[in-house]
Amino acid sequence: MRYISTRRGPNTPTRSFSDILLEGLAPDGGLYLPEEYPTLSRSDLDELRIVLREDGYAAMAAGIISLFVDDIPANDLSAITARAYRTPAFSDPQIVPVDALEGTDLHLAHLSNGPTAAFKDMAMQLLGELFEYELTRRGDWLTIVGATSGDTGSSAEYALRGRRGLSVVMLTPAGRMTAFQRAQMFSLLDENIVNVAVDGVFDDCQDLVKAVNMDADFKATWHVGAVNSINWARLLAQVCYYVATWLRVTEEGADASSKVSVVVPSGNFGNVCAAHIARQMGVPLGTLVVATNENDVLDEFFRTGVYRPRSSADTLATSSPSMDISKASNFERFIFDLMGRDGDATRALFDVALARDGYFDLSGTPEFAALRDTYGFISGTSSHADRLAEIARTEKESGYLLDPHTADGVHVARAVRPQIEGPLVVMETALPVKFADTILEATGHLPPVPKRFEGIEGREERVTPLANSVEDLKALIRERVRPGA
Ligand SMILES: Cc1ncc(COP(=O)(O)O)c(C=O)c1O
Ligand SMILES: N[C@@H](CCOP(=O)(O)O)C(=O)O
Image 1: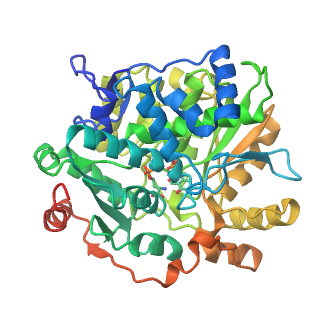
Image 2 (image 1 turned 90 degrees about the vertical axis):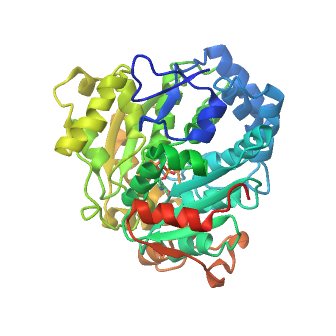
């Protein structure tokens, strides 16, 4: 399987999986995607069902990932997924259990049972193993420069801490994360981890990451790599849980007519982009529902065809803070598919129109019509009041405590339910323990603290403040990263 950039020109060479794993962002500023999506036939899905039932999630994931990776031997891939997806790192042996939300006609897919209580662990545990494998094979090293709105950072740091040849510089938006999220990251005092508080929002952090990656000399000198969903391997890992979700919700013998729809709390568009890719592969996913918070740029696009990222000043600080994102990086991957995989057309939208006009408008085009009819997308949005009401209602009626992001998903799910036939699964993206203040406001009590997180907020913390400046970031990397350590 070879990989292409979303901004490819006619002569851009294709790349191997292990090259793009370490490279992250393509040199032309685009994002990597497979040259074509492999397909899963009915019998492939039957086979994966047996593997999931008899050998477990890790074996199923290896089967799917091997369709995209031809430069790592199959046995090694199986060993990698077995190390990534196991207990006790994941608290449930099913890794991704899916169950009915009592008293509703919804399901929940539990993606947050990993080490840091967010769905990011599903991909990051795999990425940690893949990086170590590939760097050892090449005798190479990597400086990860990442951006987080609260969950990617801790997930990456827990997955990468102590691994040979890897340093992590993680940019966080100063003052925009919860106390628990800050403690998870800033209490890690490992030498290879540098936490940074940027004077800006998540989008500023992500822009800094991209700017560092676009400086070819700096990137080459510092071996800069990515853990954000910029990195294709993140999405690849996420495709696997959509397959598992379909398998767990449907019965043996189910075929393409057994559609399962999903509601995905969305910010950077990585999670729902993985659902889109699974659907393109032939997994019978019906409707893909994008659920946003008050930062509703994506909802606006799916309703109107206008994509208008907001400025940092217009990006609201909400009570589902990990989704406080206005420039959804992975959206470019979907638009590339929507534009018939035309790199020039994608570049014209993201590199030219956005830079010149601050928006692009697909309303009235065949592509806009295809959003729902061909690609199955619809969207909805949720506010602080909706979120609080949903957390309280679900606890009362279903006996289940939602985190604020999943609550956005459940709120949107209830709104779209009448339009959707068949099972509707909300993807649970975090556990409530990370968002205590909002849970308290919604329910009048604090969330339970799983044993593995007890005492996390009392520990010593270390973080370096940084202006929103690429040059300052480069200087920090020069000063703090020890190449190859
Ligand atoms: C808890 C949580 N929910 C939802 C999201 C949105 O996911 P995505 O960025 O993949 O759209 C994020 C991060 O972005 C998150 O951390
Ligand atoms: N919600 C994320 C921000 C998006 O990051 P990505 O790594 O999925 O691109 C976070 O919690 O950091």
